[in-house]
Image (cartoon, rainbow, N blue to C red; front, side, top):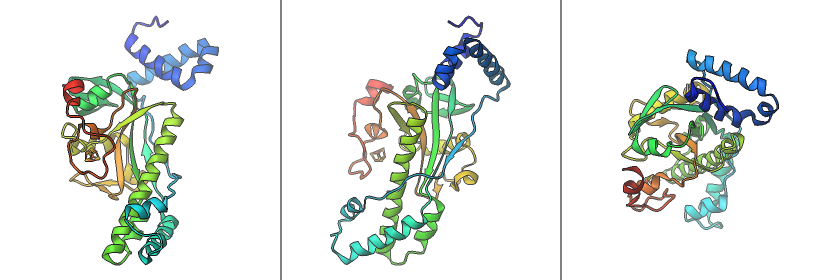
Length: 275
Ligand code: SF4
């Protein structure tokens, strides 16, 4: 279908435009070529970059029965009542947020991927992104408001419970962000990778991820320290992408007794898929 001399740019643009505007473009073939010409000019000028998007209305309902169970508290106990009181306070102040953008792969090598001009070094990331052109770098946070609330909670046990409540808010907000991202961009099944989860993609790559997402301090109040820690600590960052292949970082991680494990460790996966 495409006759233009630069087939790489055109086939890339065709895929993106078809996903974004499939009905209009089929009804208006002349507009198709018009949009291609504009997009090609933008690519050539280096300004075909999409702005970050902020979600500040994430849902974050906490399942209190699950929370009490994970804290090993009897629902009728005084401690459980204290926790429920803390949950009530937390839900009043919490404002979790997400910031993400749609980004495009410029180049790949044996163990690196260049996304919107930023080079990430990871063999696993490179293999996992082998079939996609478009990715979604993101940062999701439970928010500074919740951090400030928890810093005023007194008592060691109460502080631990407040920390677990913040974790629950982050988990719920992250689920809502992911569901809305997937639905809003028609991604189907997806997977995510996070710098620092694997030796292959170390935490030092976190700075590049933040550079890719944009000004997260300005956008959602998340700061990255010189040692690559996020403030507030109840934040998560990564790159989500559409894929038919099931992937969890945990499949490549041998850490024992990890409470956050989402998939069994597969000791043969590295050899089979990434070597
Ligand atoms: S097993 Fe635990 S430490 Fe390892 S990748 Fe999964 S969540 Fe992270």
